[in-house]
Structures are given as structure tokens and as C-alpha cells.
Length: 244
Image (tube, rainbow, N blue to C red; front, side, top):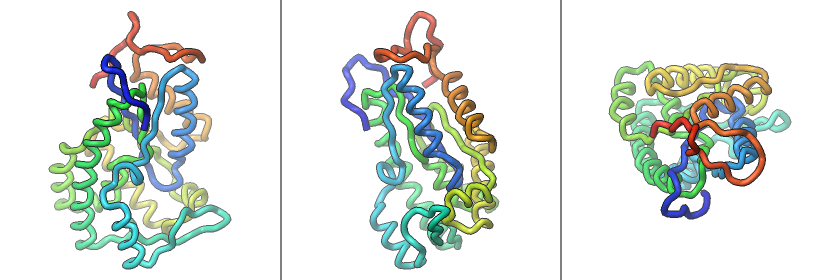
């Protein structure tokens, strides 16, 4: 997750991407990483499920044994039927809230390490917001629990939710029923209002969506020229400081 930082280096800026399956997170992350690296910035990435989630192996094995869903990643040529986050019940909600609390505490540790990693930018592929969007946000008890959990979460300096048409997203990544994707999409949008400060990128043609993500990031970074060359410092005389 990046190299060790020098004692005088500035903390990394954290950026996260969230959204329903098939929304295009990997595509946007790859494009943003390339753009920032072309500007001379040091960029690192963190995969939430691999690097943050607590008890990952136990959760995977237990989920497959109980729900009997398919494993792997669905493609248009080889669709699969997953059963995990789309399974909702009072018991599962309680279990998820407990696991998400552990993930929030793990995220505090990983985020602190990311900021000290020596990178200028650390991009998270998914975030705890993707977990919270699995909950029924229409349930007042769930919303009450979230209001207690959210203050424990380390919020990135820039957070994106990539909105997407569920039918088009499922065509790209056929894993979950379309009904769940509609519920999940609505939960992401509700969560953006509940948390605040999240940038929602609307469904756009891919080139426009990429441009909007880059514009949103650059608008929140200290000004610098997007030119290839040596590592660009973000704290020059004309820099506009990022609010940490």
C-alpha cells in the first residue's frame, strides 16, 4: 500500500469509490490513477474487502455454506447467482451491524497507515459505505444504529458514489437480481444524504463520467499542472490547501 514515508512528508489524501455492482468503479479508479500519476503524483490503492474487512475468510466460507450462492465474478458471457448481501432478515441485519462495527474499527487502522504510506493519494476500491448500503435504510431502527456507527468511521477527503442504471449495471456484471440492484441503488443515494459530503456521479456516458470524476478530484486538491515529469509537490505558493 505504498512505501514508507519520510518524516517530513505530508499525509496522503484519501479518495474512495462506491456504487452498485457494475457501476464502473474499477474503470474509474484505473483512469483516475493513470491521470494522477501522469501529473507526477504518487498514487496507491486499497481494496476494501481484501485490506480492510474483518474476518474475511470466515465471512466468505460461512456465507457460501449457509446461502449456497455462486462464487466468483459474473460476466456477460458467464453470469452467476450470488446470495450474500442480497439476503435480508432481522438476524442478518444484526450480524451485519456487528461486522460493520469491526470493519469501521479496522478502517481506522488502515486509513491511518494509508495516510502515512508516503503516497500523495490513496484510492479505496469500495469503502464501508458499500457495506452500509446493504442495510434497509427505510427501517428506523437501522437508521438509528447507523447514526451511532457513522461517527466512528474515518471519512475520506473525497468520496464518490457512482450512480448507475441497475439494468445496465447488471448487464455488465450479472450477479444479483435486478430487484436487489434497484433497492441497493436507492440505499446508496439515501446514504449519501445521511452521511453528507459524498459526490454522486450521475449515470453518464463513460468519457463524461471519467471527466467528471477527474474534475471533482482536481477541484478539491491544491492546484497543480497535469504534466508528466518528476513528482509534483502540492504545497507550492499558489496551492489551495485541502481541508483535513
